[in-house]
Length: 238
Length: 238
DNA sequence: CATTGCCTCACCATTTCGGGGGAGTTGAAA
DNA sequence: TTTCAACTCCCCCGAAATGGTGAGGCAATG
Image (cartoon, rainbow over all chains, first blue to last red):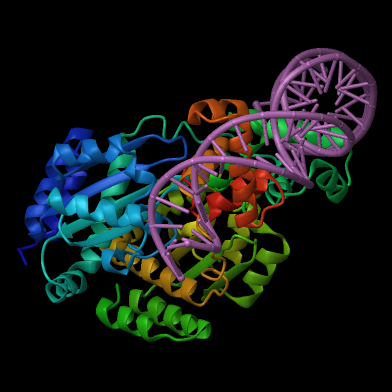
């Protein structure tokens, strides 16, 4: 399937100096791998998204308009996995999932797909996907052959995309103090403030100061928000 | 520097069926890359750690005993970055950092290092590191040459290590209904119940039913706990 | 030696949440 | 056809969380 010059592609990618360049790269990638589509897409903890790829604008529009992000088994499935995922291995049993798949077929996405999840600091999550229309055997052969190349490309592509994202580095909130981490962790584990305070052997007043300062550092609107942010930024672990 | 048979190594890695096997692999890797040390290390959601590598037991013991994890610039630096990091580019200015480096040298860790951060679901974070004793030019040459291979190996190594970690797949809970997902998502974004209810165009009473049923499904003690669980299980995305 | 960040504690009024009920409609699955 | 899950709405009330403000000690940084 296609002729692949990985070195050249990575070199081109490296030479890219603007976000728009990524679009060209991904088209080149699609051609190099000789698949129907190739897409890169990321989401971060603050809900921002960026995507580029070869899907038709109509499909992208429909996808975003209907907020398929929250239902798409590809997203859902990859989010919990570490390794690349063949679409076949995902759970398409639910109705919305089936619906999305049928619609995707109409828009020429392809019946086969291979998605590589990539994670970055601060809860950044990206997907690099190749999709194609072919039978299972051909697809297995493809993924077998290019699995590693795709992982590398996904990695480099994501790195490049992050470079262009301003405020991504600045967004890194101040680290929480040890006590704040303790407090937020226990709160995230479902304990009430009374329990947390007792567990940390401090007064509830003190505890509240920690929670509030954590909330402030995280730019969170309330405790639950702060827990969510701390979690998705990896500042605490439950 | 060394002869490298990437295919063979990845094949061996793939054939590994026990956690102990990783230790052999990493020794083989060190020899293949012809560096002084190679180490893999991860930190888990529940705070436990696993590491394997070629550092001397004395160093590992000292490192854990003094809890250097919280001070080590390699850990700190990589945690906020996406891309592999050359130790030279880290911030060694703080006193504990300098102390750790001096001590590491004594224990033969090497003056050069290259660490690849890898992230998985649920806040899993791992580091794959090669270290060596040589001058800057030689090291630059090494990293330049094997950068990609190291990334791939880190990726596969981590995947394998995760395979042996039980309890990662077992924590499956019933999926949330669409409305529950909406509710939990907005709650996680920091909105109050009043705002969420308005945003979803439902009454606060109804909203509360969703939150409570989500809490029940997730086995959570309270709303914040439910949000934390939904987030770390990837059921919602903020 | 002044500043800054962290840890600790306190009070108060207000808002929000949590838990306990009950009850009607769809639509799909058994 | 019944059953079940999901979606929608309503009541009450006590317990818990929140927001604002103030303040002292201690360690490290510069």
